[in-house]
Image (spheres, rainbow, N blue to C red):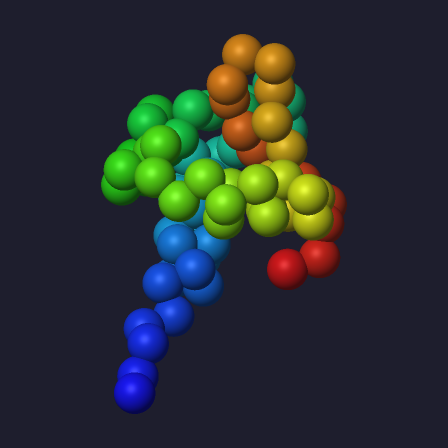
Length: 71
């Protein structure tokens, strides 16, 4: 039985969209919606994993940017 790698696809989608938006520091952080991320409130577990690993960083106002964590 084959299961598509949805979590990995979602993770890559988030990282690519944030990079394309230029969200590399707090000053240039964007919301998921502004970055063009599909279903910005879906897959909360994947977002939490990215935050915990430091791959993305959350600002207090709901904006995100790419962190210094290791992929």
